[in-house]
Image 1 (tube, rainbow, N blue to C red):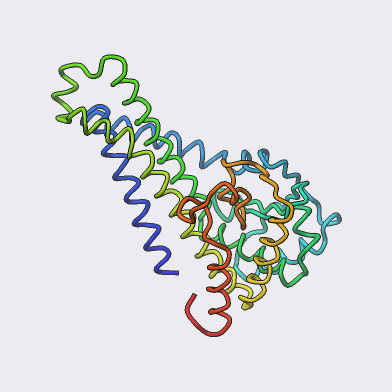
Image 2: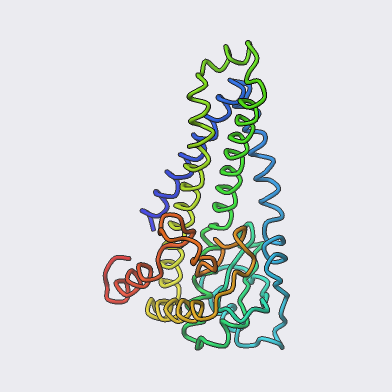
Amino acid sequence: MTATATRTALLMAALIALLGIGGWAFAGSRGLVAMALVGLAINFGAYWFSDRLALLANGAQPVSRDEAPALYAIVESLTAQAGMPMPSIHLIPSPSPNAFATGRGPDHAAVAVTEGLLRIVDRRELTGVLAHELSHVRNRDVLVATVAAGIAGVISTIGYALQFGLMFGGLSGNDREDRRGSPLAMIAWVVVAPIIAMLLQLAISRAREYGADASGARLTGDPDGLADALERIEGAAQRRPDELGGPATAHLFIVNPLRGRSMLSWLSTHPPVEDRVARLRAMAGGGAP
């Protein structure tokens, strides 16, 4: 867990540094302040509204205790163990087995599972899945991912703005002097920076998945339960693919619903399921995750 947290911190620092460089390239020292304000505004909006948007995008509906007593019982047991408040529980009307958690922290969290997940997993496997999702909430992974996405979005926006600046007359004399940059450097930013930002964002997402697997396995004391669930979900999802809420919320799910679109693991929001399962099996055998 310490290694995962360190890796995430370094990746976030790289994203923030990239944002600062972009602000300088876009408008010199004034750009640093402007990009900081834009980044804060985007992240403030994401902080407050991302949970509702994620639930809405996936058609998740609140479910009552009477409608899903087993689901409530597992979540109540896990939250009591973890010392967390009870999140709201939602059901997604999709046959594809999957689940996600969202919210800005333990006091404002939601857990959503698909109808397909409840059909194919047993209680032990469902407990592993829910422990993984609650670990995302406890570790504040949703907030980290939201901030990373916001920063990456600003970096891409800078790239587009610079692109239009180069296309329609470039920079004024004062701007050129303030930035002290060359047209080649700006072109490199336009082409390379958004790609680097995307790769850093995806790397953060993958690191948080490993961390939630380990935290969830420790919470239940049963790494094999989550490993079995991941294998079952992956196999069923391949037979019945469903893109669910689309790319904007793909990083939230326990198994990537868009995995068919990426041929390379470093272009995915999730680590390969076989790698995650291997780490969990190692934990069950007494090894390090």
